[in-house]
Image 1 (cartoon, rainbow, N blue to C red):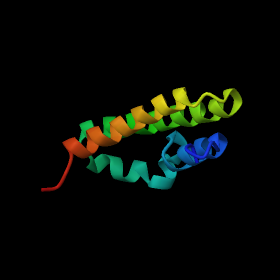
Image 2 (image 1 turned 135 degrees about the horizontal axis):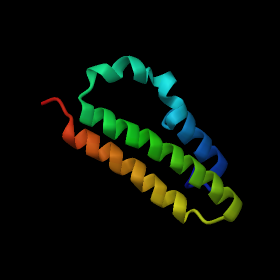
Image 3 (image 1 turned 90 degrees about the horizontal axis):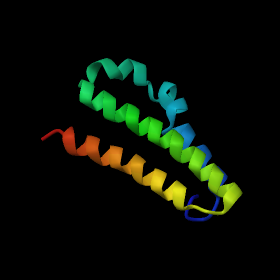
Image 4 (image 1 turned 120 degrees about the vertical axis):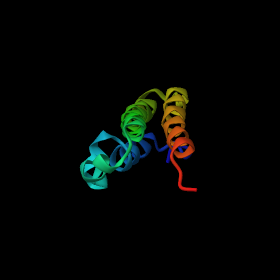
Length: 90
């Protein structure tokens, strides 16, 4: 949606699927006690970054400038990479 210039939809999807408001849908409170504290911290940072991305994507709809949204998306991706690099089954 972001690549197609549908900034409002990109923001809505990000918030609904990854943002802070998605925690209940993911069952985060049920699985969090089984995660190492570092994983919990990275996960929380990812959800917070996704909510910030959602806002920046929606702002891009008003301003036409997608650069802040792209920077915010990079911060979401950085959290994903950090978690998957640190926590993996071998």
